[in-house]
Image (cartoon, rainbow, N blue to C red; front, side, top):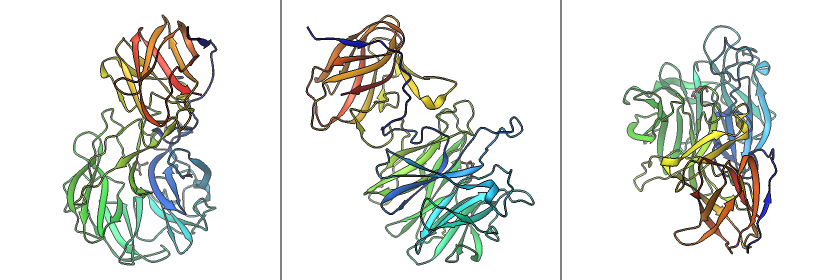
Length: 439
Ligand code: FUB
């Protein structure tokens, strides 16, 4: 008889750890992601949403500083800490809480961090630049904002024609040539959204691929922001509308803000959603999903996922609530601790036959000895972890527990390499899973 080793311990393990899933930053809110590749790493420059320190007057977008994050595999992200705070911007309002969507570009060994902020005098937004010798800073903000750039959401393009362009949202979508050190516009701004179908909102991201220019932007047709795009042979247009990259979100996070980046031969869409703050959509979190280009250069629509990108080691805590697919008629998500959303989620399988699938789990070259479930099943349950149509771990009987506990069981199957796991409830009701893992 198979030895069943059950550890009935209420654990306080957090949801962090090594795993490739959405959202990618799991200990603070992050929004408006601009991803850039510098020195072989991906650098993520994002807005840092916070809960307003002066509630309820500022129950709105609220950001006092910027962090930057870097990664070599899009799974493990290093937080390099605060790179700029509102108190340190000479031209800014030190209590403006308006450090909105930024960008960063490298030119001749200098890193130019470009950011919107509330000015010390007057209303609205200006856009300034802070300069550093490395992607993580320290960044030194300039004394003055860029003259003539009034608005939000800057994006800088270094085009193959040798020129640098800046785009921003202010009285529509504006674009202009800018000088080499980003201190002054060279020429009058061109309004780029006019010939496009109505609905441009903000957050333009422009990039060049195979000699063509892509203008991608949040676009509202119904309730909330989709991500749409247009293409041109010239950085300053005219641009021809092509369609939608990402549909509006079903749960009405009003904003979506994004960037596209190619890394190690694959294109990725960085975007945001209010995963950790479902009832307040101004506290958002960065996600990543893959992007595929068609032969003719058009972009295939991207479906937002919880699973995200990357490979999850079988030995890590596999957060199956960040699933690739589910059986819709019997699964739901909940926060492990609604007071502390960053502790992550559980997935509930309500009835027998319900399942959840999690792709791209790497078992490496050595078969696991044990499988561990962290779960809660008031009446106990039976589960099987399928590897395809026929191969499977289990079935396993998990004893009744009214609290989350871990059960460590001999795996009983030799499995190596990259696998998809489909956890199926064979019997039981309302069984909640926090994670599974192998050792
Ligand atoms: O984060 C504040 C604003 O929300 C950004 O500047 C917009 O693009 C939208 O994401």
